[in-house]
Amino acid sequence: MRIQEIAEAIKTLSPTDRHHLRKLLKEQDEADKLAVFHQVLLSQGLVKEVKKSHGTATIERQLIEIKGKPVSETIIEERNRR
Image (cartoon, rainbow, N blue to C red; front, side, top):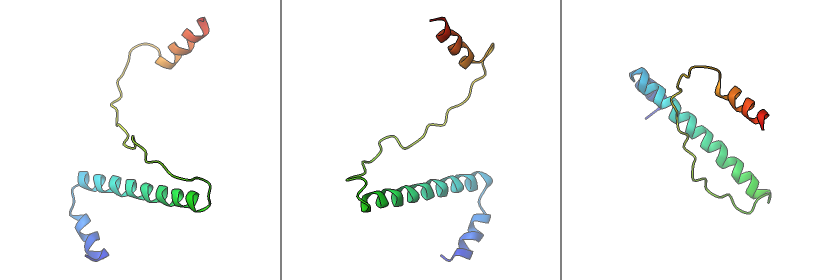
């Protein structure tokens, strides 16, 4: 498939699918950059090995709204009382 055909196929995707595609491409780009970085470290003798990460996936968390003052403020107040 040529680049032009791929570009045309992308235009037919739903907004949700385009968002998902962008996310996948960004993740792949970051993985490629990390692989090159690791290779440079190895080739320069700065590290002997690069261990694989076990928890590379990030969890998307849903924010919740709380009543009252911010939790960070409460934590600071409690630390100051000790």
